[in-house]
Length: 288
Length: 266
Image (tube, chains in turn purple, green):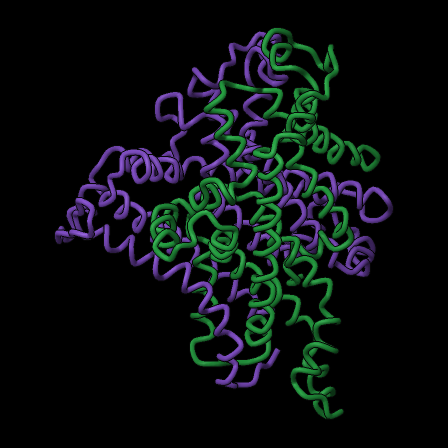
C-alpha cells in the first residue's frame, strides 16, 4: 500500500509509546544501573565498569546455560516447524471437522504455563503418570527426575505438545489463502505432490512461516515457567535454560550485578537474531 | 494414501488430549488414591477437590483476580493499539520503522529480565499487589502484539475506504468509529483473543508483582504446592479449571482462528 507522509501520525502513536516506554525504559535503566555498579542496598552504588560483563562472559555457568538454550531452541524449531506444516497439510479443508480440529488444537495454547508444567509433571511421573508408567511397562527405564536424557526428552515433548499447534494454525491460514485455480492448473500440468508443495504451497506459506519461526524462536528462547515447574531445572543443572538461570541468580542469590549484566547480554542476543529475522520478513513483504 | 490423511490430525489431537485427560482424571481422585494406585480412570469418583476450590476464598479469588487483570489488560492494549496501528498502516512518519521494531523488541524481551526491576519499579510507585500493576506490566508484550496484528488487518482494508468517507464529508473521528472499526471487527476480536491468551498464561511477572490482594490463580497453585505438602488432587482440579476460560474464548473466535493466527497478513 502506498502510504502518505504525515508527521501528525505521531499523535496516534503516543499512547502506545508512553505505555510501552513506561514499562520498558524505566525498568531497563534499572538493569543497566545494576550492570555497571556494585550495590549494598540503601541506594549506595559503586562504579564497577565492565567487571560484571567480563565475569559473566567468562563463566562456565553462563556458557553452559547458553549452550543448553541454543540446543533446546534448535531442537524445538527442527521438530515443530516441519511437524506443524505436515499436520496443516493433512487437515480437512472444509466442513464441520475444520472447526473441531482448530478448537481442539488451540487448547494447549490457552493453558497457563505453570499448569502446562504441572500437567506434564503428573503425566510423566514414573509411578503415577500415564506416560511414565506406560514407558516403564514397555521396558524403558524412564525417570525424568533422575536421568538427564529423560528430562530433556520430557521437556521437548512438552514443548512440542504445547506449541506445535501455533505452527499448525499459522501454516493452515497460509494454505487456506491459496486459490483452487492453482491446484487445478497443477493437476492439468500433471505436477507431482512434491512439486505442488514446493512450488505452490511453500511460497504461499512463506510469510506466515517466517512469523511462526520468529515467534517460536523468541518464545522458546525465553522459556521459563514450564521447565521450571516440570523439572525445576534439574536433574542437577541439566535443564536450566537461560531464563531459569537468570531468575535463580537475580531473585534466588540476589547477585544483582552479574544478573543484570547477564540480562543485557541475553537481551542483546535475542535482539540480534530477531533483527535479522525481521529484516528478512520485511524484505519479503516489500517484494510481494 | 489420500484416504488415510485424516489419521495425521487424529493422532495429533489424541496426543494433545492425553495430558489434559490425565489432569481431569486426577482431579476426580483423592490425593491418596493418586499416590497409591495407578488407574486410567477414577476408582472412587469424588468432587471434593472442586468443592474445596469453589468454597475456599483463597482459591476462587485467584480466578477472579486473574480474570480481572486479564480483562483490564485487553481493554488497555486494544484501546491504545487501535490508533497506533492505524497510523502505522496508513502513514509514513519520522522513525516509523524504527518505532515499530522497537515495539516488537519488547515482545522479544524475556520476562525474566524484567522480573526484578518491575518489582522495584511498581513498589516505588505504590502499585505493588494491585490488578492494574499486572495489567500494565502485561502491556509490555501485549501492546506490541496488538499493534502488529491490528496493523495487518488494517493494511488489508483498501485506502479507498478512507478517501471515499472524507469525500462524503465524514470527519476523521466519525469515520474511524462509524465505518473503520466495524470493518475490522474480526481483527479486533482476534486481537482481544491474543491479549487474553498471553496475559492469561503468563505467570512470572504476575507472580512477581502480587502478594495477596491481586494474587493470580497460577501463583495460588504454586504456593499451595510448596506450603501444604503436595495436594495433587486439588492441584489437578485447579489446573483443570484454568482451561475453562480459554476454552470459552476459543469457542467464540473459532471461525477467525486460522486467519487471525496469520495476523491478517496472508
